[in-house]
Every structure is written in C-alpha cells, then in structure tokens.
Image: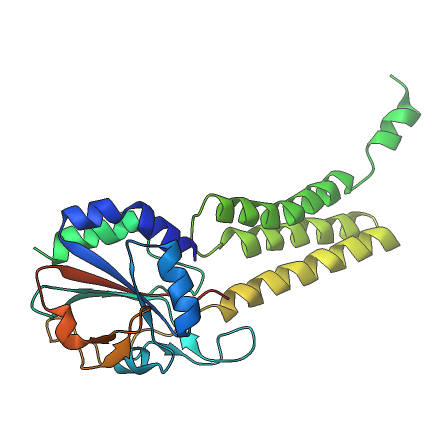
Length: 111
Length: 138
C-alpha cells in the first residue's frame, strides 16, 4: 500500500499533466471501497474476478502468503486514445516504481 | 607496557567476529529503515552484508576455534542463505502478456470500487491513464 500513499501524495502533479491514476488489485468490493475512501484521488478498480488482471496478463500465481494468486506489480501508461504507450514490470516483487519515475515516464511517453 | 594484558586484548579473530555480528544485525535494521523511508527497491545490500558477516565469522572460527564462535558463524551463514533465498523468491518473470506498446489496450470489463462497470472504452477520453497493479490490502 505504500505505493498508493506515494501516488496519492503526487496526484496533483499527475493531474497537471492530464494523467489520471487507476489502481487495480484483485480485492473485493468492500476492500476496494475502503481503499477508495483512503485514497480519494485514485480511481480504484475492484477486479475480484480478475478480468482486467487476466486481460493484461499480470496474474502472479501462488504469490499471496496463503498461496493464492494476485497481480504482479506492473504499471501501464495509456494515452487519450486508449493506446498503450509504456509498460513497466520490476525485476523483483519488492520493487515499485517511484512516483517521480512514473511522472518522468509520463512526460516522455504521453506527449 | 604490560605484555600479558596486551596479549589478552588481542584475541585472534575477535574483531572479525564482532564486526560480522554487527553487519549481520545491521542488514535487517537497514531494511526496516528503508521501508520507513518508503524506498521500495529490492534490498540487495541485505544478502551482501549477510554474506560478508558470515565470511567474517567463518574467519574468526578459522583463527581460533570455540563453540560460541562456531554457533555465531553457523547462525550468520544460515541468515545469509535465508536472505539470498528470500530475495531470489521475490524475482518476477519478465512481462510476456498481451499488452503491446503502440497497440490499443486489450478489451476487458471489470468493476470500480463504487460498483460501476469499467471497460477499455473508459480509457479513451480527455485524460491519459496510468494503470498501476498493486497487491491489495494484505
């Protein structure tokens, strides 16, 4: 969740660039609503049926502490026409893209 | 200079053992500090420091054998092994999914936190989108 805290803090900088932040996990409606309440400037997706996670191929099998599947940390930049402009997948689960790096990528790839 | 006390102070390998212990304990402390600073990067320094700590403890055992030294070295070797395997276990495979740069986003239908539908059509509009997949609240 630290990455969401960081994104929420930098929300204004994304808004100034005309970029909205959509955050996706396979948590259910109730948890997603809680996340949305906590991070009001992010658009929270409750992908409990993993339709978006499957469509994008970011499912990380057996990666939860209980052995369940979850989403691999991945960031995708999509332009105003709905085309993919950039994708970031870290080498390690522990690594997350810093907001500053995402802003830099947005400046570079979403012109 | 008292020769006896000088010899007592210079026990072979003692400095290496203590340095190994300190380094071995510092690695997890650094990681906690890293998380508190919200730096989300792979902590490569942990297994590297752990290995260095284990090597120093092994050197201390080599210089002078003793049950406590052996136990400390064994503990530090196990800790270094654990740190390497824990880091390796978090390795992600390279992305090989259907999302292709330059192509339209794949079609999907899912749900927002407020229960509304969200599809690929919602990605086109006045704003660009940064879509971030995260691992949930667990």
